[in-house]
Amino acid sequence: MMAFGDAIRVKTRREIDAMREASRHVAEVLLELRELTKPGVTTGELDQHARKAIRKRGVESSFLGYGPYGLPPYPGVLCVSVNDEVVHGIPGSRELGEGDIVSLDFGAACEGYHGDSAVTLALGPVPAVAQKLVDVTRDALDRAIEQMVPGKRLSDIGHAVQVRAESEGFSVVRQFVGHGIGREMHEPPQIPNYGPAGRGPRLRPGMVFAIEPMVTAGSPDVEILEDEWTAVTADGSLAAHFEHTILITENGPEVLTRVPGSH
Image 1: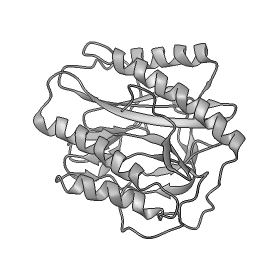
Image 2 (image 1 turned 45 degrees about the vertical axis):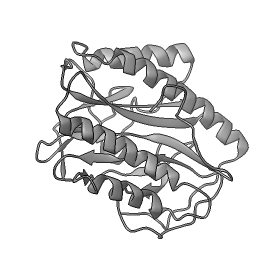
Image 3 (image 1 turned 60 degrees about the vertical axis):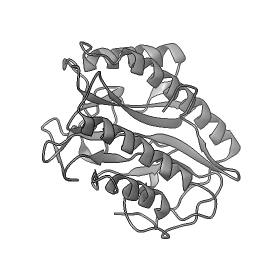
């Protein structure tokens, strides 16, 4: 449900500076993880690298111990979701293989303010539909970011994702949404990746959102595994996930979690 009634905080310059720093660390760690994500590596090894990077950089994990709505505390600093896993895959002993598509979702906080980003990678040759799914989901995020200019409406963001994904025959997950971000990792408003354009509050400079298309090659329906975190496609189809933390400025969107080499 789109929470248009919730207040959207406009960040101060000091808050924005802290979020820029947190987001830079997130982007740089994700670049390190992308280089390590290869066939033969376990998802737990990726999480261990992310833990070391957090300690080295002196930032805090946004994910470790997070447990809203009565969920058990999340046990990792990284979400690693493989193939039909949409989001929130818990890292462990699973070994990645050639042909997998792998989503890495990572968040960190600096001076109490968060940055959040995700990328989906194709390992080696993958089926054509898998590569197309990854490419379209990445492009859907870019189309959404293009809408993030002062004066546009909040729903224009998700509408852009839906149009791009569905134009290629893919489905947009309804159960999970983008969100405001700042002192809390999840702040109002919720930002679905679907819906009509031209609705909701107008976008203003100083608003910061985490936009994250989650797109499947089949049905949009998802199920939650027994670990209470991992979300998988109900029909076993492939899923891809991209995310950036974006600041709205007078001059348009500033992607805080993008550094040279990022998606």
